[in-house]
Image (cartoon, rainbow, N blue to C red; front, side, top):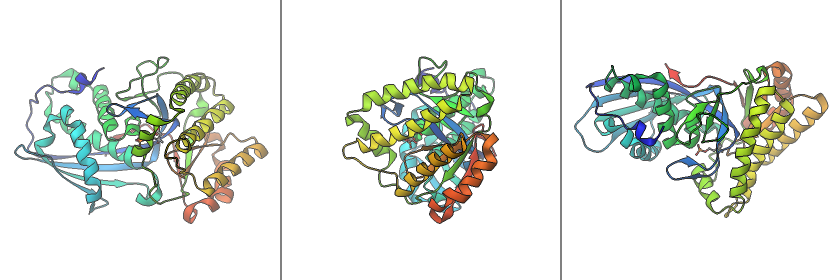
Length: 363
Ligand code: PMV
């Protein structure tokens, strides 16, 4: 697939006004994407678990207008959110070549997240993927109903991931599930820099319904955005080695997923999380997104694992919150451990239980 495959032929249908609604989840990367080039293309391949509970629910109302600039309003939880509008404008600019209808409609985007806005959980992956699904949903109604390629569900999901990527790189991995690869990798068939693809090989039962409890350590907006963080990889002295390491870690995961080797999984996933943050510390200017409680949680997880032989582990995204990952067979004991020993390190004691899911769907 190339970029050209996402430029549609002239539309054959006309719709005056209608509405589409989709929900799309967040995802948590096991091998991290950190560093990009060109138009939102990743410097290395990444893989994530798609989540279930943490999601955005978005409705796109649209009404035909005469051509001209973009016309849209964004509502979050029923309130106009002007702060989001520059981000959406930038997104519209990027997707316009692939969605020629975009300046022919007046849009109202109504969105809500199932997780609290101020939780420090990035809503860009779920939010951008839900919006991309809505736009593809609208486009499928404008396209020739007899055109098999354009009406093919698989193609539409690929296009949604392609568009979501232009809003936020990691959003490309939220359309499908439960394991999604984004970024071309020589050992992963079908993988592409342009969109996310469902992991195509054998996955051991140990990874079915994998759990992720998100510990909310810091709910404030982070001091360094991921856009700035990605950018700083251009001058990072360890960037090349990092990109190579991420790709070799992904290759190693293929046999880990096949055999269900949880000890190797833990070692790889925790190392990935710490490498991501090591890149931040090695950037110029350097920065640290972890907080003292992030480290206390990591220390407690290591202590618990040593004492109980549990297969619980942690990962981090670009923030202070900790994602606690564990197999569903350990659900009871790990959730008890979180409640008794980790929740004290969370802001207002708050955390969110989640598990792997299958991606975006209509509402
Ligand atoms: O999608 P962005 O641009 O917000 O970048 C997200 C990067 C990480 O969450 C830190 C890693 C990843 O692969 O999701």
